[in-house]
Image (tube, rainbow, N blue to C red):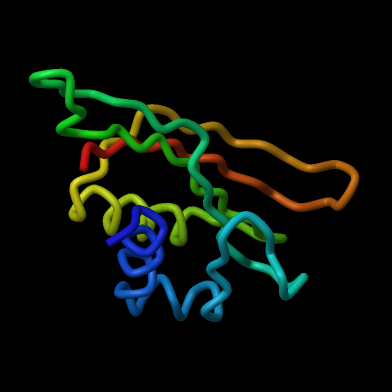
Length: 114
């Protein structure tokens, strides 16, 4: 299974989350143009464990972005719950506001070795 499928399956398996965002969970781009929505991507991928010159484990560093015109705390809590239960470790998060499109934006970064 690819890391992309793993992330999508992890997020879509949480029915509370799916209901909160109207099933708008996308790779990189919010194709619907509607909010709230979630996008995700891998921003770094590198070898984490090696033996006999072979990569045994890869670290996938991902970012999940929550986009909303309103308070997104319930969505963020469900994202955190799903990702940590699936073995992802949060490395950082930041609250943002996108002035040009007037959307609240939470960027959450995780890492998982696979």
